[in-house]
Image 1 (cartoon, rainbow, N blue to C red):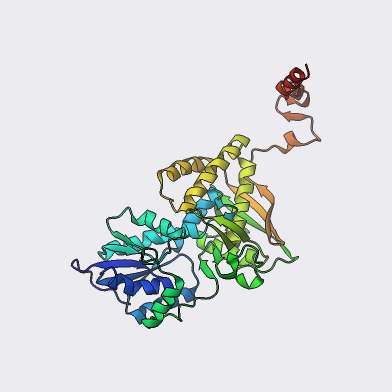
Image 2: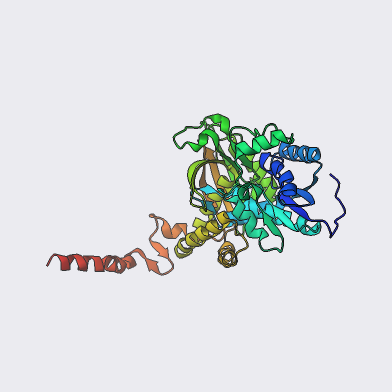
Length: 402
């Protein structure tokens, strides 16, 4: 809808708006329960399907809601590629939803400031992670932060009845059996029968990935300073490269995760994810790091990557600790330039070749078919090392035998 002229005497609240049940119900609640004169709906594009925007726009029109759509796809893709440099994953799966939330929150905050809003609102419950990720960004502003679903203790059943009574533009609040969140980097599926850990999901829950088969394909991913920059020799920007790999690797069943996830509030939940491009890029990046970084760098960077992933999962991507971690990562990535050949097969993305001018590797030194190790070092020089290796352990064993 067209923008209204901001009036400093009007109390406005910017609502993270999807057009689904939760955020649709929030519109009248913000006016009636919280006393706001106007609600401004904001939908942020981080790579969702086109039909989600159509739903949000249609619902906003039916509600006579001022509605803004903000394109933050490139900003999100850039953050995802920073996550590649940090080999970021949480409990075994690539971060997707977690990284999208602070990008979305920042975009909503910008709209709120432009339109002189005095409040910021979301439709998250009090059980999930997203409430924390949104508010970590918003609570740095002077605006009131409101969470109607959490603060009023609303259940899904209540929201469905409320929507029906008010004739709100949702289909009885029925958004399908599962809760699905899609962005450029990942697709998450949760809820319904998937809440039962023993339930074996069928192929119907997947959209990005085909059932793994026997076909194989080898692709080459190019990197510069740790950033993915090309596919099979063709230079690509982050959004294009991610979209291409999602389609390409997804056809080979790459990028499925089915895990029991520990949320920030301590709840354990069953989650299913699809992340073909993320899987390929993370596996390829780590393989290239293995070639160009020293043993000590690799070992220490695993600790740095873990901390980066934890803060990323929390949505605290602007935290001081993150800046410190990224300073170390930036230094290591100056040598992470090269190419990795990845074989897509059986639902896996397996690095099968890697090359770089910065390789900490000498074929001549490592080969069993050559005498010289490197320069003036010979095989026989290892004898002294072998004698000292394990000396303390042998001495301790001898003492115990006395």
